Length: 110
Image 1 (spheres, helix red, strand yellow):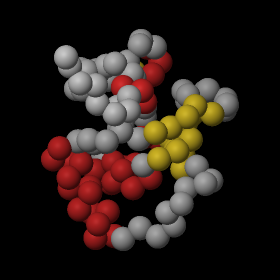
Image 2: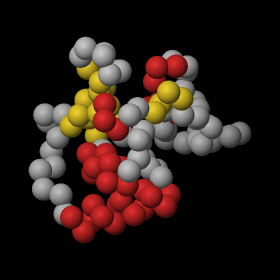
Image 3: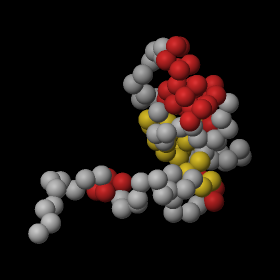
Image 4: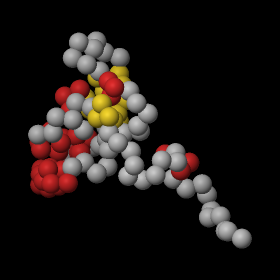
């Protein structure tokens, strides 16, 4: 008899997708991928971001890590209603340090 572990695990939160099988796709292209790419310039920090002060040394360290490895943990954003002359706009929910480091690293999309 196979013993079931306690709780439902991460599948209850993120679905049944196998780890590492998601592919990034442009937001404009739709698709059913959980992870999508957005232009760095289209993301604005939310008004309720808890972090106010950013340690310059640690931000520089994160920038170097993003340059060498890319962004490992994705940013969480939500689409906001705005005139789409330049494309869709997004409000940052989580990941302001990663967004700042991505901008410093010169990434165009995250």
